[in-house]
Image (cartoon, rainbow, N blue to C red):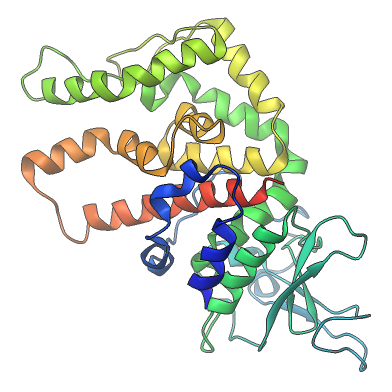
Length: 330
């Protein structure tokens, strides 16, 4: 059910190139349970933990009037996800039978209904989504949940939606500051030593794969980045820093949530911006992120239960963010 709904929603994305590699892979992606949040700014309690921790682990259900029907007409019922729903915890048994979508009461956006209850964010804001496609995809995540428990770590689109609605409007300057603070250490700017027998192969791959992205940055923002062999990076030209920061300030809440999530998973703001601006698709981004580690795997072999889990987890994080980006665009 979940897979079929998501497949339908993917057809509405205006940039099919972005999601082309994902089409046949969503079933395996959904099965991976990523327990670590990808972003430093992904959902925290905006009330500074005024509620007790025991309440934060419970789903808040508010009953509506007795004449509520399954379509949610004329109801004041809601389901509020706890703060802990954004982690790897199981937050409770499935309490609903039907998952539907409907247009928001004010006609501006779409909401998800669990039976007659309107879904809300951890900060008790209505989960008002910009497109019907995104609403149906999040509804599919909720419909996928099993009767023995709700597993939020299998709902990456829900997580990103809550981030965009709850955190980004309140902490936008801090998110941008956090991203720019690490900009000089971007993965794209780092090069392995060319004259070392152990790393010369990595350097050759970096030149082949990353230099075209360096050229794109130059043409897109008007400044060529400086590359470094130091793990600590180095200072970039002030013009490039200001151009990237200006771009971040021009993003909407959904775009900034996606950039923050991808940059955290990729250790690269440039790769995140490349995905948002359509320069990179999912597979291209994952290849660049794993460039050095894949070289080591090719040389020394894959560690089962280690490398394969890392690859699957990265694919979930990058793919879900790219899907969220595509589905949120009107």
